[in-house]
Image 1 (cartoon, helix red, strand yellow):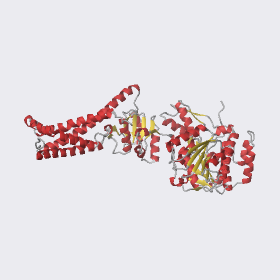
Image 2 (image 1 turned 30 degrees about the vertical axis):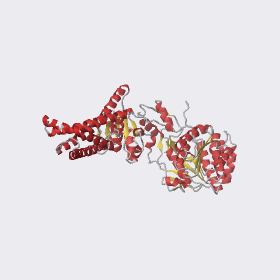
Image 3 (image 1 turned 60 degrees about the vertical axis):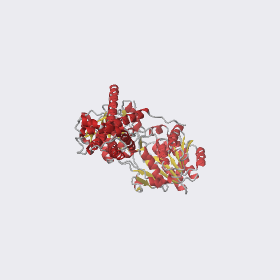
Image 4 (image 1 turned 135 degrees about the vertical axis):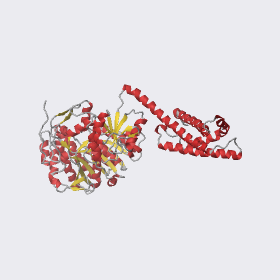
Length: 633
């Protein structure tokens, strides 16, 4: 049998409030009578016997009402208008019942009661409401003073952050109250900015509103702001991006609040404030998944090869659509293990989740796994992706990317998989490196198998660089900034298409619903972004000034690297069409000689370091290796 533990602090607080209410209830009537009789002592003392006679029943009635209205269960450190309304209603009803007690007592001659003038009852009611409410607000203020005093003592050891809140609306008020309730341990709001001119010059929760968003740098300097929190979740994304860019001209750490909905879903609201990420600065709205078009995963056995950044996100996205089971295949056990643990913790009991360790280069192992689970949907994410590494080990890129895809696609066809989707890259378009060439060949392979299969729809998804994925520029830049710099960029003019990990996974899943077989799907990713701009913005988001606090060094293009990428080949552009999702294009299959491809692949199987590039160029004639611009020290 479990013994319920009693929180001593809560018990003491409730005893304190009840004792205070008892004193206030009885003192208020006496004071009301004294006020009514202009404090004439002879008349005031005449009412003492009447007060003693009604003390027990009236006090009991008030306490019952206060309990019923929740005045002993409210968290008074968060007290606001609602609690004061409850206090007013309880005081008003209690006063009316007090009159009823007097009248009933007189009528039945139960108690030695007199007949107070109506004015005494009215004054008494206002005194009870006012004093009971004041006691609770003083309790709240006392706690705040204690917290602030503790924060001041702690501040002697560390400087308290000075915070600017951008937005004096509902979210700004929530953040301000939460910071106060936590004793300003996470920083103290010293100023707000808001574009609404009616709010400018006023104070909210004691915080002054000193101007619009255009004046953020000026106001931040005047108030010695350390941190800026963007509190405008309902503003259009373009406006939020504009404000973030203004805020980044300061040396302040930049953070953003969640949406009101996220705040309502969170028990620890203040913890939801997060640092602004580089993904928030994409110059286009994030592409969102069309949920209705992804129901094809529901009740299906889904298999994902490769549990890296995108593969693990594919597993998360697929898990949301209630598959029959989910199978993770990877030859690197740590990635698979971590992804499995995360998914099992969240979805345990809802559907089976399995790990199978194995390489896509091993046909026998693939057949064992496909025979065991008979997957309906396969997302093939296993691949080598790092351009410079594959330049040094081209045969490994061929084994894993080309023949790993070939083996998995062939096995999928043998076991009548319904959908087989591979991940490709913009580097497959007019490739300048081994990795891009191998990915272009994987696109041809899935088109080859699509023509051979009557049961499986094969498709490829082509996208740009994925922000935050393993080995991408963002984690590298962050590590360099944490170590004080310099941040290294290959060339000041290098540009890339960028998307988030979530977008990449959503695009792959979306393609599965749209695929009829043989297509290459491409995301409209807007304009290419300079890597240099990313580096500068990330330095600013970290609270530093580029070239002053953190330097940027240019190292030269690496082997196989181009200054810019392309999303479609010239022969694809003519037939490219929009899909049901207006951000996703589809390019129809390009005609090629199937027999010639099969023969070239067999030839490629026997390639070595000396002739592998030559064989790749036979299959991908537009593979033109980029010059090596790397700096030799």
